[in-house]
Image (cartoon, rainbow, N blue to C red; front, side, top):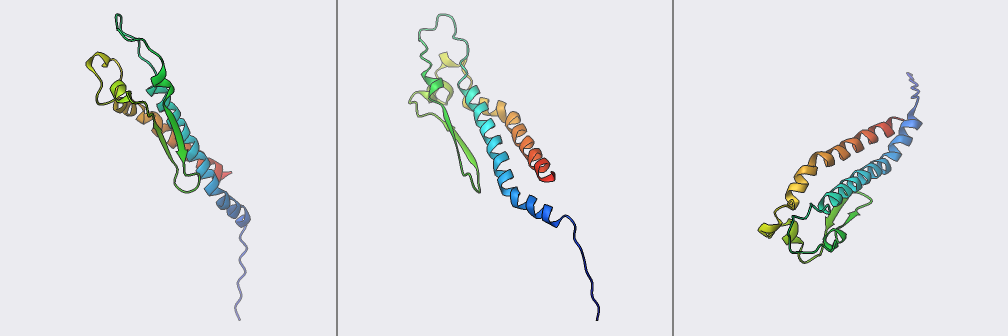
Length: 134
């Protein structure tokens, strides 16, 4: 009869780390999603200088109505940002009047923030690896 005994060292530690992986991944992806939405919200609601002689009075309502939410605390995680303000498409959207061209379109803001957002997720992935390595 032939018998082999194998002793695996560190298996308990590996098992513990793997059990923590879903929570760690969820935490880091939620953090990156939140940072991304906060950055977008800040940039979307940032008011440009009002051109001299402009006839309208600013109320600040446009900036106050932008909200974000995060869904999917288990499995998929996704964020959503938006406003239900009726005239929002005329401020930064496709129906923006010529006299408001000093406001960036949403598409431009998103394009400008793409690298910043990518950075939040890259940092999140590095954090996941670091936390699982401990």
